[in-house]
Image (cartoon, one colour):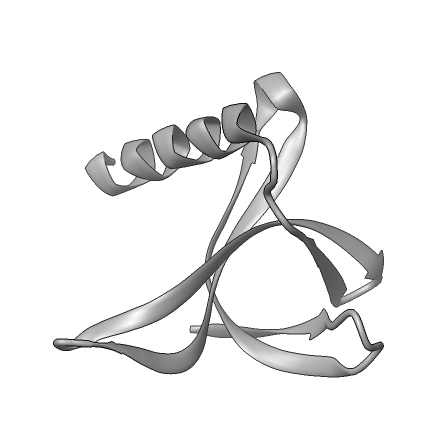
Length: 84
C-alpha cells in the first residue's frame, strides 16, 4: 500500500496509507480513502474518507465532507468501486 503525507490542521505532517483515491467528475472534487493502521474491532480496519487538495507536491490537506449531497455522491462512488 502506498504511503502519503497528510498535513494536519496544526501544521504537522503525518504519514498514512492510501487505500484508494477517486474523482467525482460531476461535482469536480477529489477524494481519498486512508488508513492509519487502526483497528475498528471484529477484524475490521478503521478508514478515513475525505476530500483532498495537494498543497505542495506530495503533501495533501484533507477537507471534511459536511454537505449531505456530496456525502451521498461519495457513498455512491465507493459502492461503484467495490462492485467494480
